[in-house]
Image 1: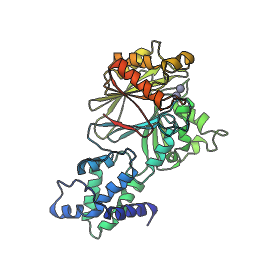
Image 2: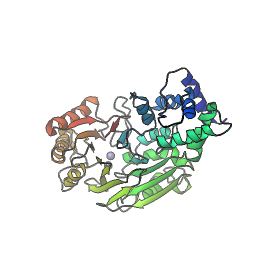
Image 3: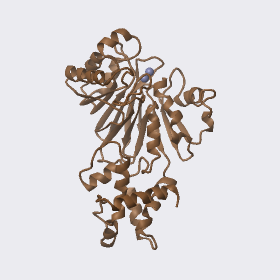
Length: 388
Ligand SMILES: [Zn+2]
Ligand SMILES: [Zn+2]
């Protein structure tokens, strides 16, 4: 048995010692129902629970199944933060020290926004024994029903069969990569993103140019390029494609349910940064990373975040720090509050925290914005997740 099968088997063994939720089987036939409600099936949940860093406990069996498969509710956009620092990584364990990387899940569409050092942890997570992004509850149920109904298949072999079906055949990482800009703190995590070296990984870059270069061109010249990195871009085993977008363009990303509408606008930041507004199934998430206020570009921020269900924004400086860092390309707490007042989002998450900012400072910035703008404001920490 290969390692994947072994992992599943250890999950099965672990499951037997626990009381588990079972996979929803409302419409299964009588015979199938008894097979599906046998203990080993609960192993999925044990396996995923063990992997899940959110700390959230599902409340019903349906919720549990949906939760572990990342399919919580048909309309939820799931945003998860893997790196929340700006400028450079730090060793902070309380909020997290990795630089910018977050993911957005819209049904089967999995988007990685920025490839800062947080992407290293994301890569490890994607390669852990879990269904790949985009696998739905229906895919798994359909597979199990057919597999269990076939002659000679035993429930105890189900773990290995699932590993084969969903990890070796279909199991490669599939992600769309969207980039705010290509400064080092949003870029270099991809050098240690393990899936980029695997032949079963497909990464689709979507974006505009930064000082005339597309993101794959930047990767080829400055990231996977000797002597900066020993393996040249063209020799990486993964498949990488690119779609060029023009600043201001509205474009779509496909999902298994409904296309995601995306709007990209330029931000005020050296070497060209962009902000994004994602609309899907009636929900809106806006993400505006590095930008400095006090320019005509501020209108773009307000447009993108206008009445969004969630606005993720950089808010790097307190007003006091900003006085010393004017022109560095980042926003102050008061300016972020002013933009929030105009845009009226329902919820704000601050990110791209200054590497020197401790817990108190990061919390103070979020409070200032919340009190001045009257909008629920929280700060992102490494590993936090928000669903809208
Ligand atoms: Zn940055
Ligand atoms: Zn920057």
